[in-house]
Length: 390
Image (cartoon, rainbow, N blue to C red; front, side, top):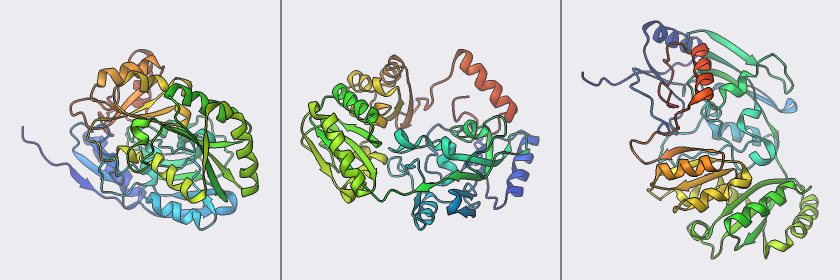
């Protein structure tokens, strides 16, 4: 049987999305749903017959700065959304990463893509995940039916919290046509406290102490020596970093408290606002691993167990979220997943290692539950089939 290139559809309205999905559902055609295409290589879609690009659904429908709420189409570019809210002194609280350079992608990340993958940056430890800021949405299910969930207010009760279910589903349950998110005021400035020379386990302990201190740490990361010594940081020792945000006077007082709380972890230094922003941009985009060709893994674990991943693997690692997110370079898929399981977490392959599943297959009760949810939204399995291994 000859391979046939998928038919490309580029709807510009929700009605066109509905028409495309309904037709595919009726004919049981497999659809690959894409936005900017920057994360297209994370989990391959199995033999798609239709490529449905949402890049044309890029309008901002409503932005109410005084209500801290923004509504847009899913194809709206992330950089445009961030520029818009910044003009009102606001921000996307979950600090979404782009990761396009990390993944070797040429497209522009979209708001819908970030939410579909539930991607959050360093501020997750303080502000929560992307799914926590998705207030509501409109979508087309794999049945070819329109449905809505949530609303356009910060407090909204409508029964099942489908927003949290949709975030992180990678387009396997429904095609988003509209999203409403919460925004927050942007901090006036920031500063970062640095501790040098800590081993991984000790660094995780320092980050835990800082995050539990009454100083409102908004980011906590650790770069072991093997990674800290790389570009762009080029440090001579391992680096543990803790960010504070807010007004200058408040930051100064909290820095003193934080330094005192961490006095037994060793020498500390300080990055001011500009240097601090640059540093956390590097952490958010995993810049130290941009040019490394080895397979790259994204490991989620309880923060207190994060150091176990670095200890178990021969490859370099970067710790974010106080140790709860570990980026790891490793050729050994079995070793990565075994280390993740031992630390009560899970691992996803984000780059490299052809033939290795990006998302580990689910088993037991979790697989059964996932199957029932999938059947409810997409009974014929036409939306991004195989993307999550199901």
